[in-house]
Length: 204
Image 1 (cartoon, rainbow, N blue to C red):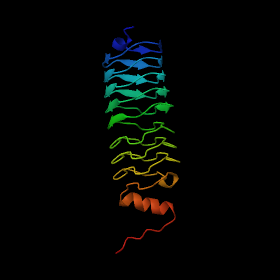
Image 2: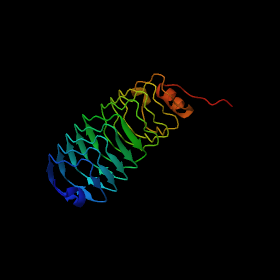
Image 3: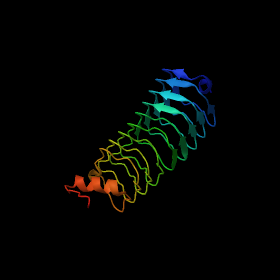
Image 4: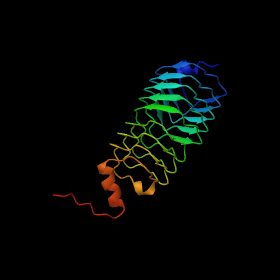
């Protein structure tokens, strides 16, 4: 095994490495391609991955605290029981990944692409998901309370029994999503009614 978990790297091709259980601190990986890397039960804290690509990597049981995955591309990766605690994933794209069960504790996920993924039952409360692409994503029974969803795309998203109370929804077209027993507050209800052409009058 290389010493890259201790040093970080720039523009490196990292293939078939076993980082099982390693602890990564405040090191930086920039423009790297990681293919078939075993990151099972890895712990990162203050680590930065910028413009990196992850192919077929295993993040099972990994824990990431205050770690940045900025502009990264995750392809066919497994995040089974992984934890993201206060992490920054701005502009990252997930394709054909296993995303549940997953623990997300806050963090900045602006402009993240999660199109078509199964996020059912996940607790995403207070996560910043502004401008994210959640099209065709399954969010059945997901908790999005107090999440920031402004400008997010939810076309054909499944929001059955999802909790959107106190979520910020400016610019979100909820009428493009599937809503069935979805929990929303008054502000969201008014916005949804207006999207369907209703004129909402506040009684004097």
